[in-house]
Length: 209
Image (cartoon, rainbow, N blue to C red; front, side):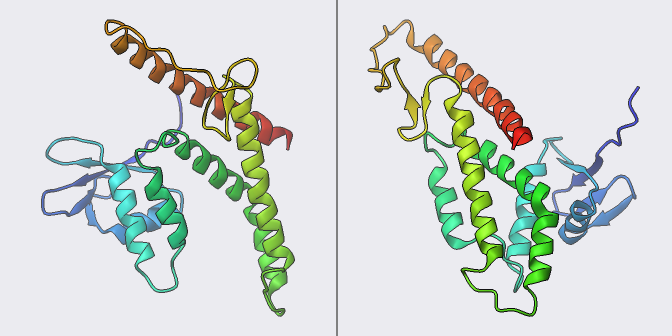
């Protein structure tokens, strides 16, 4: 038997009101944002259909926070690039990379807080050591991610597709019409397995760093 605390259940009704079953009270998106900040986990369900809508509610919280003056975290260039990834061949890899990067940021946050503290009282210029350290960390994140991708399946990060044994892109073959559905499903399963293996490689590389 585990003592792990179960996530709080939040129900969202047709009138868009959110009900916290843990406290038996209605809450707002701001209340949920505070719960996230203090580490209280929750899952949001549609009260009528029972569908898990946690992702969409968390997205709404981010939208609300981004709309506040001085609270912006997501640069416009980042948002544009993120939109471009939807439907792209790299879409399945983006969540893994973003999760890996934010985990590294959380792990390094105390060091960055100290650098921010030391920066007070002096002009914070683009060449400041704080920004240099952040840029270096971003480069290390990308290097580790690329290294992990190259450790399995002959994946070529530059080309975004598997390579042959000689390092050249493998020429596609035209499968028979009978084999197409099975091949498509097999390719998807293989890609999912590669992503799972990549996440394990990222964790191993991060521990060695």
